[in-house]
Image 1 (spheres, one colour):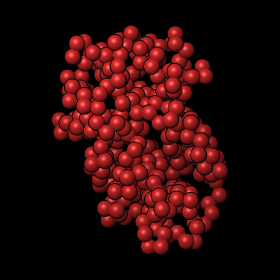
Image 2 (cartoon, helix red, strand yellow; image 1 turned 180 degrees about the vertical axis):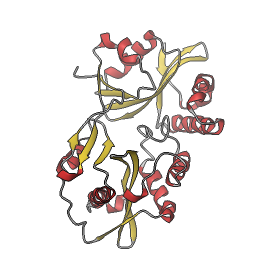
Image 3 (cartoon, helix red, strand yellow; image 1 turned 120 degrees about the vertical axis):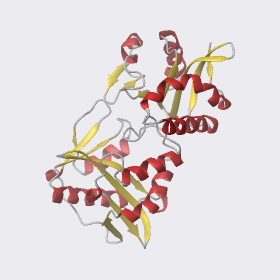
Image 4 (cartoon, helix red, strand yellow; image 1 turned 90 degrees about the vertical axis):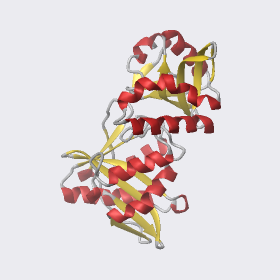
Length: 296
């Protein structure tokens, strides 16, 4: 029988998470992920649907819900057709959409096709820079290029901005880590130890002498830079900080001879879509393994 996973059940997941160790670079990273997952379950940030055999867990689907949208972070144990059907019976009545990355359940769409679920692609927006005029930043803002010493102030800002967003950090972790693990991952990226950080197209924004926001870039290929992180302090929102940072990145990419800026978002993120339409974004797409539940 399917029932909600109790908040104190995190340690019971260890036998089910063990097969995922191969997805991590080493045992320390895997242990940090396990601990972070248990903490997220205990805090209620991540919920679970579980099937038990007596007192033992047989299968668990771990989920983060945001309004009418849920992201499946991982399916653990014997995720049989019957288990997936039971989870959908629970979720489909109260959600508009369900998303999971391909590594979570690549074969699930085919197994659930009879339920009317259809695959769609999370939308990668690619900006053709030559089409977009660059306006001067807000005069009250000071936008400058990234410096290595900025990491000490920027990482806490990013950790705070991502504290309630445990899903979707596809470029850094199999699922999003705890704030401490996230900060460590960001430190490695900014130090050039992981990924392909592009400091020449990364910027910080200051308003009245205080750090107001940051934009970080990574290089995807010779012609494309990904807008990896964009965050504004809550006190500085509504002051065009994000727009000014994006336009500074545009100019940097032109100077570097990189013709495209890309970022990844979800179809339901209407404020982001509107913002980038105003900046003359041209849509492209890349498969990210997401699936509608309702309205099929």
